[in-house]
Amino acid sequence: MNKDSFNKIINLDIDDLNDNIFIEALEYFLTIKDNKLKEEFLDKYKILIEKYLYLLLSKVDVYPIYDTDNQDVYRIDKFLFYIYSLYGYDEIKKLNINKNCNDISDNIYKECLQRYHSRVFFGLMDNFDTIKHLDLYVKERKIKAKYNAIDKNILEEAYYIYFSLDNFLDKENYKKRNEYFIKKNDISYNTLVDYARTYGLLYLNISLGEIEMMIRSIDITITRLAKKNILDYSLNCIMQNDDIDNIKEIVLSYQLSPYVIKQFINRETFYYKKYFKKLNSIINKVENAIKLLENEHKYVHYSVLFSKLEKTTDEKEIIEIIKNNDDKFLTTKYIDYFISIYRITLTKDDKDRLKSFLLNKIKKAKKTLKEEKEDNKVLIEERTLKSAFNNIDFKLFLNDNICNINDFCSLMNITRNEFNKYFTLLKDTDNELYLKINEKMRNLQGQRYAVLINKVNSIADNIINGIELEDGSRRNFEILDYFLATKLDFNEFIDLYNKNVNIDIEYLRAIRAFFAKNKLTNKLNINQELDGTTIFMINDKPYEVSKEEKQTVLNYLRVKDIPLYIKVYKQALKRHINGNLILDDDKKLIKKG
Figure 1 (tube, rainbow, N blue to C red):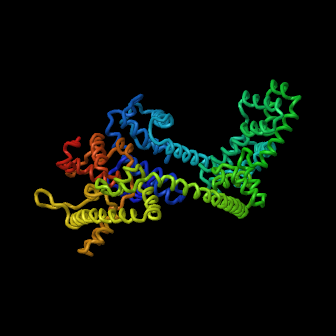
Figure 2 (tube, one colour):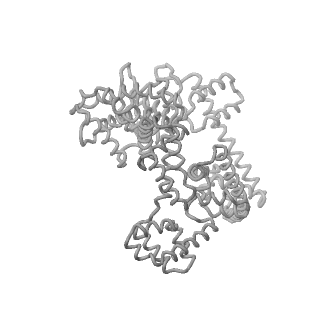
Figure 3 (cartoon, rainbow, N blue to C red):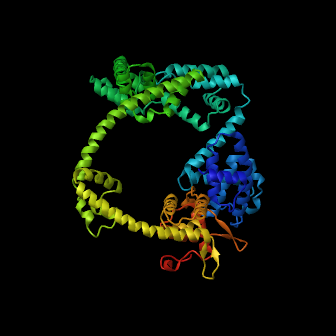
């Protein structure tokens, strides 16, 4: 997601239209909740995306083309899908692109939309998550339009009925509450769920993505009936087994409860006959296993975990609960699920208090466990460090062929951080050798410093005065020139210039301004760039950059070890198109495409 691309769309501030800007802006749009900002974006996005779509249509002789691998046709499909998702199907028909089509019926648009959607969902094209979020956006728009006229009280009751499951074992009573509401309002179960969705969207400002996650949690809880053969196998094992540890393992593995077992047996005549006489014995064994698992804080659902954590005040028990449960459940996300689904009848203030209460218990227990773990970790690290230190021969650092710390690290097969740790230990174990190595490092650093200062001064002069060309004229120094000249990061460069005895304050200000202007934040998405369209104005005429030219420049930047940011890449691309990218000593490396 890219806020810069979003802002460019909002401000209609775009030098060249390309796939990346539209995709990145759309991804960011799908994350925001400010309705006014969303409306402003949609107005501007529509203007630009239609303009871009007509540009793409000019690239194909006939559209649509069935069963084709033509990338331009695919891209047209994509942007039609965006327009459909954001503005509705009627907006596609208003585009009046029939003149480019070999079929002018309405169905042709629908087939093209489905073609794109299918390609994405089968993993053939694009980002699956973006399309999934767009589908949610379409679904949200349709739900609001269909149900926003329904009385708020009915929607509210539906929400609190549907999300009223008390805990993992409350499935039977939950089902009766739902059935009562459905019968009272003469609706279907699916409509009940849509009512719940609508209330969350319209009155609680919950995103449809969040609501769908809550619904999945409910569905998982109330429909967890294993396949017949698996459940048959587990019940058969329980019936023939008196070992409580084995029964606990079966209950935990297959997430069994008395309700699940009764439902299964009552629905299936064959299994009813097979297990009915032993049903009470099986239920008793399962209930005993569940009680033991709950005491061990290992039952299958986070509702039980948070219910127990909510009630207990015993610090040792709290620590045991935290210790014996998966960290993924001990998060704000799952506390929110728990409260949203199992404590839905609480007021907002009570929900907030319960959330803070649970988080504080978890935080305190984790801190205690972390301190215990850290104490053990420190002891282990100290032993490991001393053992590794004994294998390092620091005398070799004084050899003439060792010119810097990296040479020594490579020789010893250690990292720079490891060297620093071992070198600190050396001070206590062999201070004389430590001092000799320290003196050599200072000498080496002085030599490197002198070389760097010359380089820094040269670059600073180019930043201020520009680069002289063969004809005697000068051009501005660009960020691409900087990365071709040095691997120093910006802060390191300025620090070195500050140490120059002949420092020029005006130069320093100009250098700071150069780095501020060229601050790099937007990394290049290589796949989108290669597949998208990039157009430059060359000699006052539009020039579409070929995929081969893009690949040539990418290869050049990789070989030169230059960071792949959009701004740097665009500068290199423009120079390549103008024939100015390749230096004399690079001609063997790469040629203009």
